[in-house]
Length: 225
Image (cartoon, rainbow, N blue to C red; front, side):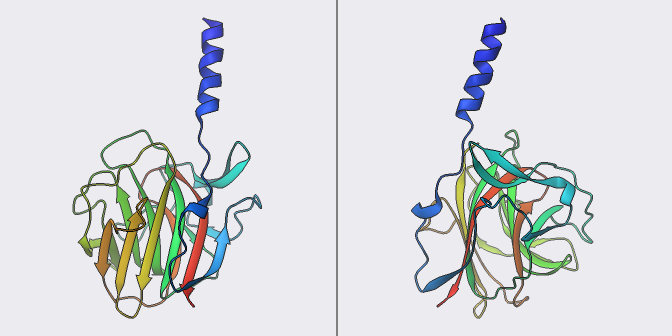
């Protein structure tokens, strides 16, 4: 029995995945890279979490990443919206494209999610993308938070984000002039979600979850050339 337990542990360690290199995600046309971070400097100083105790620097097989490790949070949003947020410091964006590697680490269930934030003005004025396993009016949508509980602004979405335990590629593109927002999940040719809204101008960007856990890596941000 002891040998079986040891073997099972070794198999588990051997199958733990590390994020693939992001070079297989094509650079968006007409855009230039202004921000890149793969956490191999073993630092999270570039980020400002709403609850620092919910985050740590993760590592698997020598690869480092930002890891959201707690579902609960000491941060209480002013209105109904995601509890765990981690924003890039000193960076406000208008028109941009952001690529991120993401890994959901919560045991599978219907509303398994991770989120991306953009146009963030303050804790009660922001946009976010909710990548939820099953779509409804409060999941797997693009949302606005404007001094009241989040409201979906999606003009297109899917039946749900096809989460697995592996790493996935996510891209969000925003055109601030026209208000267009495009969200991609693994397929960088066809957007999984779209929205149009011009309520907020330039704002901060980041990542997190409504109330789940997960990992984030290989962040790349582009603006028009």
